[in-house]
Image (cartoon, rainbow, N blue to C red; front, top):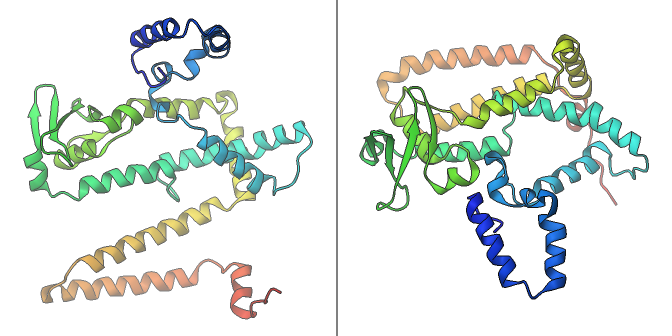
Length: 302
């Protein structure tokens, strides 16, 4: 019953469950009180959950946040005051989480778990050439039919409008409601289409509604000050973006073979990279702890 995605079928299974276990009076009284009464079933039945949260059926996310709260914010100190915890959640944790979600949505800084999962799906689609994708994809009246990546006898239907790819009939999209590798394959084969999910706009609305519109400028200034005083987000973001670009260049150079006609272009690129290196050397400062690591010997622990 928990994984039933159709609400009518859930109620049919619930009635059958009640009939099968009607002789267990104590258990059924407990089940009705703890799981069914006052619409409690809506909290654990998949068909009553929002589509974007249907894959979150365990408490791992809560445990992970609890560990982060104890380790990062409370520094493993015992907290005995509820008002202090509420103040910490409002003044520190809440703002950092909103800032992090917005940064991930704009693809700025380090990738989070959702961005990593999205990139894995993209890489699976990018592993196929355009010729292979053309053989796997067939245009239908109601969308694009694509062959399964693992079973040549299975096909999925990817729906789209004039601009965006919206859904797929595969199990991955049905469970997570996030873009699957088949949708990214269509995006590669059809450059005029791009992936967009219906719940993306709802996430943006939630984040926008989190800030009071009447005090938008004050709230933005407060968040900016909190971020710049607590953690150097902008500096880390620029540094990480430069490192990401350099890693991509390194992977590209490693996988590509250059010929002799490319020598002049490569010489120009080397000159430009040398100039960029000099500019980087002239800006920024080395962190104090990194200077100490290079100047002082490491202490040996006993």
